[in-house]
Image (cartoon, rainbow, N blue to C red; front, side):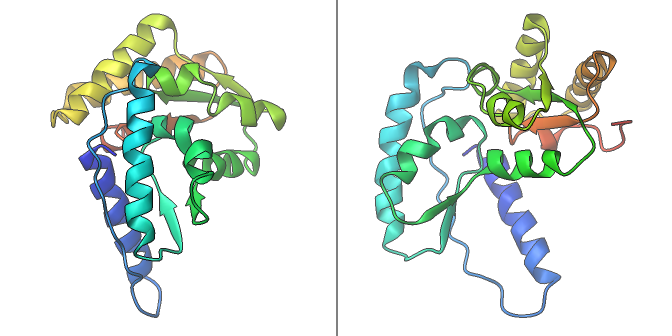
Length: 195
């Protein structure tokens, strides 16, 4: 839902399908400027109403599936899914499935305050016996500031260094891997890290 993350999703899909034989699937991007609810859920209902309208509009294109390029917005996914027969691809389910086939027993989670506090990842991982290690309150505030800088177009080296420090902190607490639970984080996360 952030324009950078939406653009990255489209680029990843184009790259994936370019490597396969056959036609490129039709991709329709609707970058919806929903109210900010990464720090608090106070605007989540307004965001839901906007997304619900967009789902109804997008149904006219007869899509095979919907995807939301935002981890935090997945707190709305079940309610959105109830409003349409078109399947939503879930980032959460995909990541949890990927972690479950790894040998990782404890995973670190970096994400927006709402994504982390809602248990989006922690609950399904716990059902599989996988622990989740989350940043401290001060680290969480630092992560939020990185997310906000990326959203405002400031993707700099400082963001990468901050994320590396927090990821190392989670590793020291026992994390065998890191979930980048905000679609802005992969844009600035270090490419080479010992996790």
